[in-house]
Image (cartoon, rainbow, N blue to C red; front, side):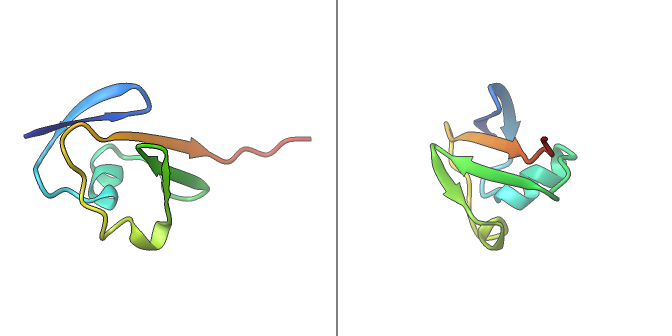
Length: 67
């Protein structure tokens, strides 16, 4: 297992997990979100390719409607 941090909460995940796998495992809706790993934006087309490593810090931002 490796340790990652998602929005300031620690999680243990399987080695070689992708961003997409983590979003699915944590039941995070993927519509209208942006994902950054260690302050680098990861485009949604790369979520299934980006392998997470021990200590990665993931920030998930949800778009909201404002007025």
